[in-house]
Length: 231
Image (cartoon, one colour):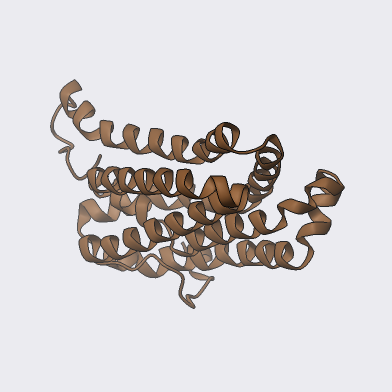
């Protein structure tokens, strides 16, 4: 991490471990959260619910493409300017990137809302039309995550990995607890709602923490998208 290591110092193994273990822990927890819904459904609900939830998850990957673009472009910018103390100067650029990537995400969400059943029928078959509501909740959560911007990436690049780890732990515990409680009654829909709610809460808290710690707002705004071209 650029904020913790001086460029004139040798990078020691202990320093790498200290800086990287929260990142690894966060990544493992995110993987666990993403897969836990299917595990819970497989253990406490029907195979039909597992199939419906899995189909919805696969379509939601379309929205994750935009997140991948932002997380690929923004981290080196944040790291460089944070180390220089000029992070505020690139806030418009970051918000511009979120604006540009947010538009196709919203288009996909609207498409799911209007034609979700038809899309599920086309891609997976008629039976999977029953995954429509699950798809809407999962997609809504991912869109809000995209519109919140790279707040988690910003915290990580600025040396605040431990904050992300703590947030991920809280999210995982709450999601698992609520999912176990609702799965018997509501099945895949209940787990999808829990996933959406705790993803949104996690992103909103991360956004506010990033604003307080980094002094920038990474969320969606009516930014000038042509700033990306100027850079």
